[in-house]
Length: 479
Image 1 (cartoon, rainbow, N blue to C red):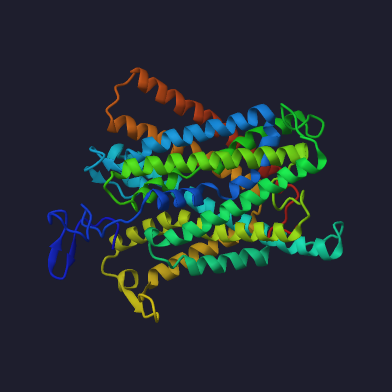
Image 2 (cartoon, rainbow, N blue to C red):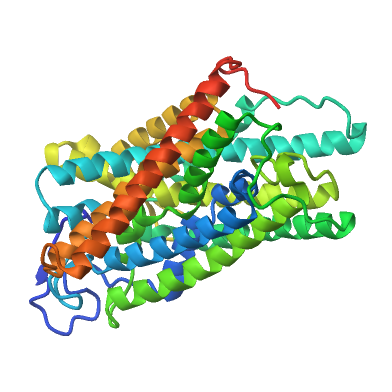
């Protein structure tokens, strides 16, 4: 079914919202949505507790014991608040019966319109493309960590154990080509639940190892102001602090797929109420995990906190536990890649079918029978375009494998426009908040403060990439 359809022909009858009491279809004529608070929370946790959690110990180390946890708490509050504003824009007008907006861009089109729709689309889809690259890099690092962990175990902790990242990125790409053939967002709920369980698994291992390290040494490392001048230059300290803001912003970012997640939720109760509960539950759980992982990682390693807690080899033993955690990261990222890329896939396919409605290549679906299951619908355009997309993200990942810097850039680039600016602007239009009223001033102040943070984070992350490029050779990355 295409994303913009408002009615369907079913066995020769018109099945739309003009048919009262239809048990199979929603008010927009689409098949009944089945999502709940739990499936929405699973999608959010899959999207949020991603590889970003692993850089939080490093981010806390740059900011210190005061600023680190404070910044994490502030980001969680802003994310929750602006997500509730965005969820209120799923339906235009009345939150219970207004017209649905199926995607983030649809919501922007309905509330703001004009040039802002194109800006939103460019930022959202570029960010989704960037996340695919970031996740490919992160998964290859975890796969290499398993190989190196076993090498250290058999040959000793001081062995070189050099491993190339390229074969692992290609292996991840092959897995994504297969999973990307799942047609729609609402059909990957099971992948989200598996991924959410995996994210708790590796976050818990990172947290447990941090606690064990603190207990073993009996010391809480780190300082109130973060990494010491001397270990880094004053200029590096500033850039790294800015980059840490980007890393934390990336760790919380999921607004760019919030409307798409909300579009899988059943009603009644209204989708807004369900999404508000799911957002609160997800952000509280996420923040607790982030605080624990960031703080215990910093307490364990202090200034030496690695950029990726489970692959920076601050921990060597028990090696089997590290292997389990890194395998969980890879499984999680396979699912998270799909959660983030499905809106981008859907947008391109919807646009192509509008432009070329008579093209058999784009519209025809071939049914492939699977014994014991429903037959699988294979679309040739979907097969070709999604495969090409995965190949491109894999090649770019092999060209620029800088985990921390990429994470910081993505966080900085997507945080202000997608998490703050558009939700605030749409909410003010929807609720008709008058200019210069106290509420208008408060919302604009929040937006401006977040813009300053995003610009600072972007500057820090680009400085990190510039530094990495000085010693970098394409396709030759090894650890």
